Amino acid sequence: MTAVARRSFLTTLGAGLAAPAILRAQSRPKRLPLCFSTYGCPKWPWRTILDQADRLGYAAIEIRVIENDEDLPRRPEFTGDRMKESRRDLDALGIKLVNLGSGVNLHAKDPATRSKHLDDGRRFIDLAHALGVPYVRMFGDKIPPDEPKEDVMKRVVDGFQQMAAYAKPAGVTVLIESHGDFTHSADLEDILIRVGSPQFALLWDAHHTFAAGKEQPAGTYAKLGKWVRHTHLKDSKPEGDKRRYVFVGEGDVPVKEQVRLLVTGGYPGYYSFEWEKRGQPDIAEPEVAFPHYVKVMGEYLAAAGYKA
Image 1 (cartoon, helix red, strand yellow):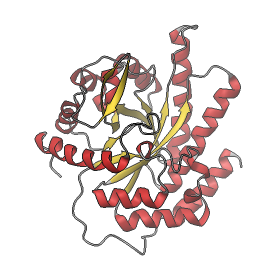
Image 2 (cartoon, one colour):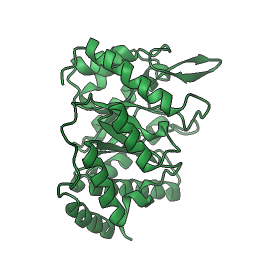
Image 3 (cartoon, one colour):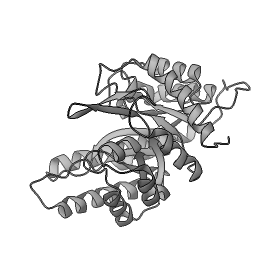
Image 4 (cartoon, one colour):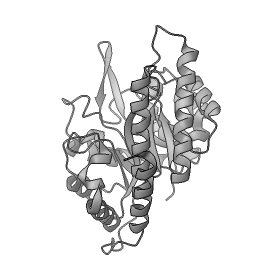
């Protein structure tokens, strides 16, 4: 299916899904603006993801993987009549889908590789449009050491300009995540300014700008805060020449300070837990890590003066 045909089909489907769900939450308590990425529960099926989010009091979910499958546009939950059921499931629980975590990388120089990633980006934007999801995450990713940095930056900027232009009529915003070789605020600011689109903003992985970018949260947020639309929060501590992910509050990442900056800065989005279970399968299970995050983040948000 061509991109145009795909968009037309999903626009029609999305319009059909806009009607209120039959089953809706009945007088549920107000939830804190907490979210988790399914990267932290890569084996869970769709129903388990929803049940755990509801039971633990999460307000939102971002989908990265379901049952170890990252090709979200082809997942049965998001195709045909199953998409209607998935929308009804979410509506019934009062849980939002806030972000689709694509694996799209926009640094590639090889034409075939670049074309594939751009097409994948369009597929994810189409899915976000059909599901009513506001954001799609993509990466700048790598700055190869064997070519000038500015050449890579130009490709990344061009790629995000294409993605933002495609996302505009869909009402979707494309987010660059502070990740990989793009964890320095100066580089991210440069890209955000050069792309120059209201459909392009930042997913602040506050762990990476601190641990990999070696920046203090206040400096990063002062430079990039106006572009932050979504966050990834997590904690870790050094282990040899790498870092090991640990429960929030048990490492050296200043998550409490990151939360304070977001709250006092007027950040209106979700505080999303990206537990790196898929990348580090030996860390604690999500059944343990997810409720711990809710407890600690409730304390951090209260200390920061968060008001619902």
